[in-house]
Every structure is written in structure tokens, then in C-alpha cells.
Amino acid sequence: MKRMVGRFAEAAYVVLIGGLAVAGAVDERAAFYLAAVALTLPSGAIAFPAMYAGYAAISAIGSIWGSAAAPDGTEAGWLSLGSATLNVALLTCAAIANVALLERLSRLRRPSHR
Image (cartoon, rainbow, N blue to C red):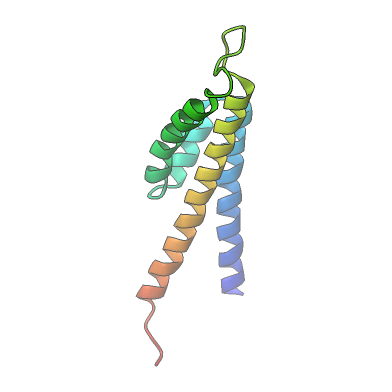
């Protein structure tokens, strides 16, 4: 029973981070992204600069085929969608990495029954 509760908490944590990242992508507000990054530390420390590097890469590669700006001067839709998708994926992966890291650390701290 205790393990089942732990699995539920792990899944809820990953869903929470994914939800914050999706909210940041839909609402285009940094507060949601920053909350997700803060909640995913220590793995979020890797995801955060990767978000900026990914945006630059998507912009550079995508600009080969089309403009990074719409005619009215705003960001092109393909760039917004691509960077939002990347941000959600990176933050969700950071949450999953934290869960895996926590499981690994808890296994190392448990005494062996050999």
C-alpha cells in the first residue's frame, strides 16, 4: 500500500509539472514556467538553459524555410508552437528525471537484505 501511494505521488508530481508547463505555453506567461523550473530542481537547472538553447535552435533551423516573424511583427506561429512543445517536453522530462533520481537515492539508502 505504501508503495502504491508513492507511485501515485510520483505520477501526480509529473502531471503537476506538465500542467504548469502547458499553462505557461498556452497563457504565454513566464510565471508558470518559472514555477515548473523551481519545482523540478535539481534537474530543472539543466532544463532551464536547454529551453533557451532549444528556442535558438528552432528559430535558426526554422528560419531556413520561413520567416521567424509574422507580417504584423509578432512571432511566427510555427516558432511559438515549436518552442512551447519543447518547453513542455523538457520540463516534463526534468520531473521524470527527478523521480528516477529520488528512487535511485532511496534504493542506495535502504539496507541490503542479503
